[in-house]
Every structure is written in structure tokens, then in C-alpha cells.
Length: 173
Image (cartoon, rainbow, N blue to C red; front, top):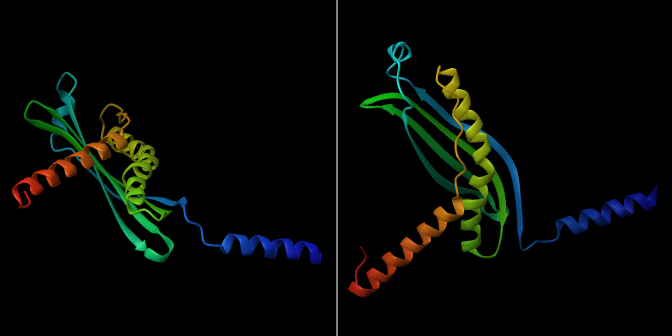
């Protein structure tokens, strides 16, 4: 029995050692949800073609506990369906998660917050959006995959271009 206690103590000592790089999804949760259907019930009595669907996604994050690398990441997805001038529905989900991201490089932490974390959160948001829209009386909606890495790279390239223009003129844009 003493041997088992020593092994447990040794394992605890190893897990307390500082680690340079660590990533863990701690919790996924629904932060906010909204569904509006201003054209109901009349929209259900009319024959109409497929609506024009607009999808917008935004990512935000903040540090909760600096010492432990705990971040709160929020993926906000808004889906708006229109027929001509009329809004059929507007569904919005803010799917969030608590993540532990420890890395000595700030750019690497930003990459994880803007690419890895929203990629993990997207299936939860997709499920919630589909549920809202079908409960609203509309056809099922399957949110297409979002390439967060491409969005991140585009953002970084735009930041570099703006910094380059600011350097050329001597003032920020």
C-alpha cells in the first residue's frame, strides 16, 4: 500500500511541474441566443423560392486568469434569411468556451483563440442554430464549415498591409 501512495505522490509532483505549452478545452457553453421572425405567420401561407441566406461570424476572447492561461472565447454566428425585402428570420447564437492556453508566444496564443477554439465551438453553434430555425417553423439549416485559419491569415495580412502603409506615410491609417 505504501508503494501505491509513493506512485501517486510522484505523479502529482510531475503534474505540478511548469509546462511551457498546454491546451485544454475546459467548458463549452451557450452564452446568448436570439431568434426573430418578423414576417410570421404570413410567410407560411405564401409559396416562395429558397430565401437568400446571409451568415456572419465573429470571434472575441478575453483572459480570465492570466497565471493559468484561462481564456473565455466567444463565437457569435448570425444567420439572416430574406425573401426580397422581407426578413424571414434572424437567428443568432453566441457559443462560448473556457480554454486553458499556455504558450510562451503571444502570437501562438492568439492563433489558438482565433482558429482552434472557434473550430471546437462551431459544431455546438451549428446544432443550436438548426434547432432555433426549425423550431421557428422553417426548413432545417446546416451551417457550412468555416475556415477560421483562412480568416485569421487574411486578418494578419491586412494588419501587415496597414502597418506598411502607416510606415510609408509616417502616420497610422
